[in-house]
Length: 157
Image (cartoon, rainbow, N blue to C red; front, side, top):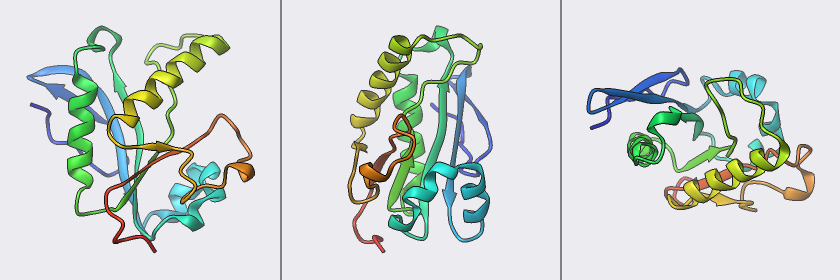
């Protein structure tokens, strides 16, 4: 059982069955916080005009190294998606490996970690290079390739 999660863009520690396994940061972006979100995430300016007025963002999901491979990431992701239901139609994220301890990853380690994340998010229906929301030719930072999940096509504006 995952504890209650906050969709306010602030770090929420995650406990599953009373064991602290990591944290999550996600939010609903709408007119009330859109400018602040853009200021913090300049890369989004390249495609924000293709997104609806309100959309979801998964900033971070972190699972402690000792808790990885136990299905906690899947449980957290299911809870996050459940929290977004009825609030947004599109969810955006960047598949970017993070570490609680500052570890240096060489280029190959980073690339492999990123590929594992892309595969993980694809299991939930996220698409990399979804041309409905991003023009790949115009991405200024190539490694910041966003993924998108469409919960429904109704809210597409």
